[in-house]
Amino acid sequence: MATKPVLLGLAAAAAAAAAAVLAGGPRWLVLVAGLGAIAVVLATLAAPRREAQAKPDEERDEDGLPARPAPVAEMLDGLVDPVLLVAGGRREDPASRRFVYANAAAKALFLLARREGILATAVRSPEILAIVDEALYGGATGEARYEPGGAQERIWRAHAAPLASGGGDGTLALLTFRDETDVRRTERTRADFLANASHELRTPLASLTGFIETLRGHARDDAGAREKFLAIMHGQARRMGRLIDDLLSLSRIELNEHVPPVGEADLAAAAGDAVEGLAPLAQEKGVAFRIQSPPQGAPVAGDRDQVLQVVQNLAENALKYSAPGGEIAIDVAAGLSAAEAAQPRSEDAAHMVLLMPDHALGQTYAAVRVRDFGPGIAREHLPRLTERFYRVEGQKSGETSGTGLGLAIVKHIVNRHRGGLTVESAEGQGAAFTAFFPSRPD
Ligand code: ADP
Image (cartoon, rainbow, N blue to C red; front, side):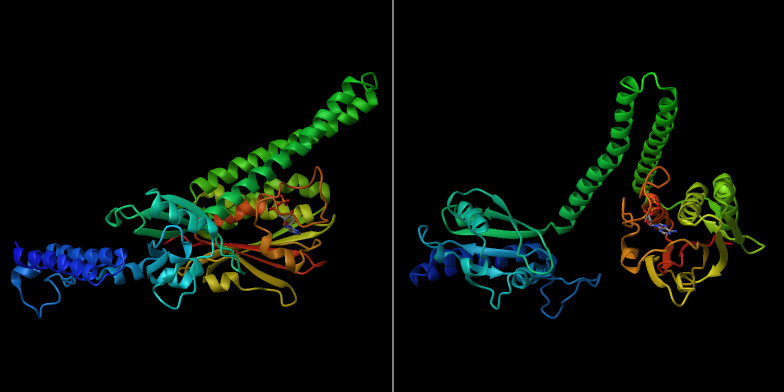
């Protein structure tokens, strides 16, 4: 046991404290000196082996790790969270609170040139200054929200705690900050989603309630009106059903988005199945599907139902937005690199990559491209297409319209499969969506 250095450290602590007291220095200086010396003792205790061997030129142990613990200041500079050590001055004088240490993250957040200074000039938030005072003089921890403003919206949670070593009477407090921007953003997205979902369900429900009242009232004995209203009610009820199905699908997909899919599917077969399922609707509208796929198929690694759902949603949209009598082209290709799969095909159309897989060296992909000749989508809408409930303003709504969740579902499924999604479109000239999935390993 390295007794000698411990004693030396304790002696240094006592000497540093005594020197500061004798010099008439402020109390926080006494404490910082004391803390520093205690840190030396702790560091000594933490490295008994090195002491035992007592070889000054030996910087690393046999595992190649540093034998000496990193200095505290260097460790604090390595933290992503801003940290300030605050010393209280005269209680009644807020200007006497000083930060006596600021780590690198704190310097960056408050644009500090130095590691110490007057707290109120660095941190200009009354709420934060209040929790610091509470920690210094009330001995209580406190939290406050901090929003610096500026172009980049960031939200921080500040936390002030008294340091026991400070004696709890106006000496030392630790002020730390945690970046809560992402958490808040997620909370807001969830709240928006709930509000949107409720609104979407409320609209058909209000229509159903209205018709029920009419049928029970003045339309009670009008057979013609009854038939007409019941048909509308049926449509609204189906719309609510579709919404609920899509909401459930989306939540199921999101729940296991981080779980890699097992199984295999064939994009060419999925294209055939999707078109078959849409045949009655396509016939009704006089729209023809044309599929082109490699004769050997396009096998991909993934969940067959989900891969089918992607093709189905894209084909359904193409059909929904096609003019009667039009044509929809579905092209399936295999053996592509991610860059080839995401490559635009049309020169005049706007092109947007909505999702790109992480770089996987040597990975090949199979892609399905669904091209329609409908109204297309203006460039400014492209980035937001996969947001839940996002719809292009002015596009036809009502019974035949979708839920605004189709492309969000597509994106989540493709993301789960580590694939990609792109869109090309020119207003008035139709749209082309391409989804690609990693090829099945041979
Ligand atoms: P929806 O169920 O409303 O179709 P989606 O998430 O599938 O919802 O699509 C979002 C929006 O993107 C649609 O409301 C529509 O405005 C636009 N959109 C999607 N596909 C096409 C397409 N093939 N042609 C034109 N607009 C499209």
